[in-house]
Length: 84
Image (tube, rainbow, N blue to C red; front, side, top):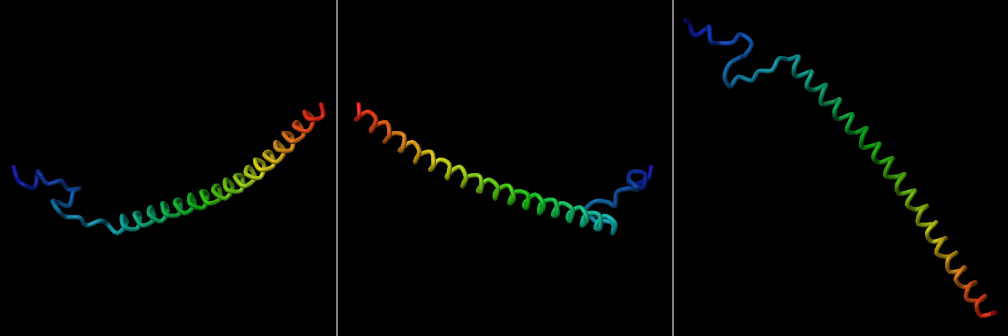
């Protein structure tokens, strides 16, 4: 039995990390794809945040209007009670 029988032809050996040129290109392409996905997701989040802020402003206006109407109704109720 020889030492060569134990060495795998696929593995470069212990401590050797020499990626193939194609692997570097593939890794770079994967990283670029992930970065594009992240940037796209960030933009989507910005759009959603703007929509939420816009909706919150509308809700605040409606709440203010409802408070004004409630005060008006309360005042009318008090005036009607005084007339009786």
